[in-house]
Length: 95
Image (tube, rainbow, N blue to C red):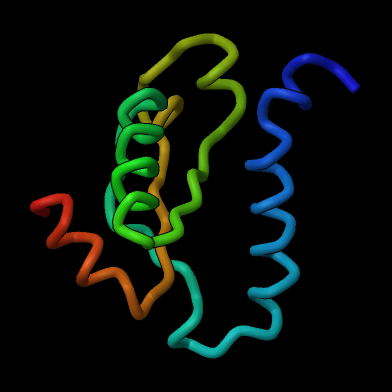
């Protein structure tokens, strides 16, 4: 296993679980995008939401991370939370 895979294994595992569960989830349980941010900011947001008990998934293109680009959506990170917690997450973040 390469370094990048080991570093991001928990995210890969969580995304795989999300993909498998999303096929069986009701509309209430599905994940929705609440905001977008740069990579570092997205991790801070994810940690803030986790501290409040709200699970969050970060969705991004790997090319933006590898090349460090934030042009035209490349390098943009979407923060996803369960649909039924989206309003609470937005209130916590002040958006």
